[in-house]
Image 1: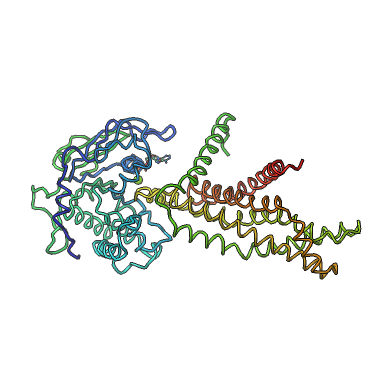
Image 2 (image 1 turned 90 degrees about the vertical axis):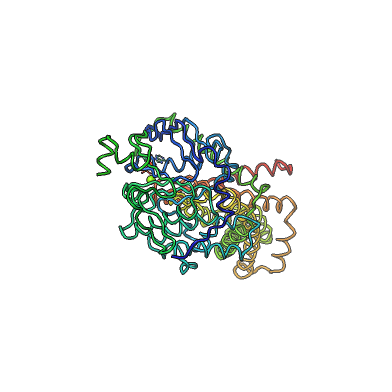
Length: 282
Length: 260
Ligand SMILES: Nc1ncnc2c1ncn2[C@@H]1O[C@H](COP(=O)(O)OP(=O)(O)O)[C@@H](O)[C@H]1O
Ligand SMILES: [Mg+2]
């Protein structure tokens, strides 16, 4: 893997105004017709942390991410993102806020009539001030981060599922967002491809230290993330020594029947007495 | 099919009308707000304008020809075949040119827009666009509305002219009329209100075609089947809407110009 750049300016930006959680859900509820999906959930994501959200299919994981982006509005409760209340915000201001957030959709959601280059560049092309050369340079940089420089002129339909997921990651990180949201990034992929995606997410986490919410239906992916760190020398992930925590704090949140039944770190999770949870971690 | 109560049905319809009005309103107000997507407008104009040219040419030619054929038949009975140029001209410019061009473009582009935007909705591309901080109303809807209105205006003029050409071919070749006479009467009969009416209509129809197409696309639900449904509904709704608006616009413009 190519070594990603880390400038002091980026680090300074990340540590700047590190007060207060970057995302805070406060008693949030939402129902679709008669189907109550989230029933008063609360949690916080401190700046610089990665939180894995686990739940079975249909438990409302994607809904949480869409609420965070303000793509849908809750029926009750408050959601603060980067210090702003997205439940009250008019759509025009939301567009501004969303530019600071990168999202990787469940099925990648690449623009199917645009090339990989234009998909990845989309965010930057909206910005009037950025020159063509600058865009080109950053597209190549983002694509080399996910090791897909050679696909520049291909269409999404010509890529495999795993490659599409990687392009989606490149598209999400190109503008160096303050928050990253991953929606089931390994969903529907074979085990080998899943591992490369998880490794990529670990690389992103350890290199840029972006605060992230990672939705997953496979708890083992989240465990790999908690127990591995990215090694810049070998450009691969490696297991952390036993009992040692990674540089980036990693926590878990488990959803069941519209409620949060667990919110804590890997150690607490391993010690949980809850039968439902034990069933998944054994 | 699931049965729904009349109240529920009425509520759905009112909501649909509200949503449509909102989209139609936004498509216009976005013109005055940044960012404006000029490149997207150009691309759409090319797609709608030049893409529709062949069907508009054929529609115009044959409509004019058949209009001349039918009218000549009637006029001959009254011995006033010399009025043929005038009849074709007024008929094409005020009514048939705008309406048939509108219907043809609706069939081609309302459906195209509904299926394109509908597919983007069901594959979450629209959500992805919003997540990237881009307003799909500004990036997708407004360019389509602007370019459809703009291009339909010129397509209608082309269709009108070709209608006259089609009429002249029938008039000279089948009815042996003098081509000079046909053309001079065809031009002379047109007064300001005919031309004004004929050129106002495409603006309205273009707006209908694009807003209806985009509305059905943006509200598509339920996978590929939903997209298919949205596509058909868009063409039907746009066509009916064009015919309704055509009647009322004609009546309104006549009232303004003081006929009847
Ligand atoms: N736009 C929507 N309209 C109706 N129901 C929805 C919508 N979005 C999600 N749901 C329902 O909400 C529940 C949770 O969905 P989702 O958040 O996508 O679950 P997950 O991502 O955990 O699998 C599901 O039962 C789904 O059917
Ligand atoms: Mg989901």
